[in-house]
Image (cartoon, rainbow, N blue to C red; front, side):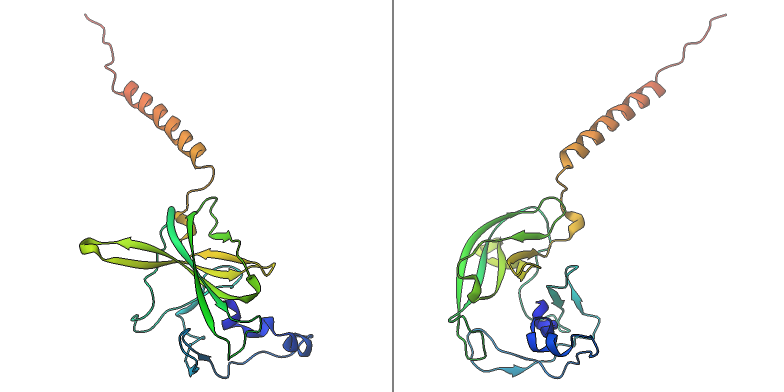
Length: 208
């Protein structure tokens, strides 16, 4: 998320000290912990590497590709209608610090991307205690095997409200005026067929 890659943007003390933009932040160290663990461990994010890239224009979500590509959920970047589950991570108190405990809440959710947009607003309870969320969809395979794919990540928008950033490629999303486009293509196809039929019509010849 954006506040992980650029934590100073939400830091009131930093905004006060650097009101004239005289200082440039320098990464010193990074720590992380699993939701089911209480111990933070140092992690190398390689933020200046080529495999750390923002997913959207406002940089509220970043993609950090692992060099070994051996962890995490497989991404689902396909467009269309999806029936999945939005898994929210809630802090046990309104104060989010290193000692907080986290619980998960699952909310079934159907998603259909329209209008070339990959951002979907969401409504949720106790929003002040939410620290993040993932949208996963099931993929049913042979032998009764079910694989869960990561299709979206919860991010905070410009108005500080939570929304769902889908991982689908914008160019693959059907525009809202797709029916009009399809109709125009169909009419153009009919006109082309008529011209083609006219071109193959036998030309009459005069008999001597």
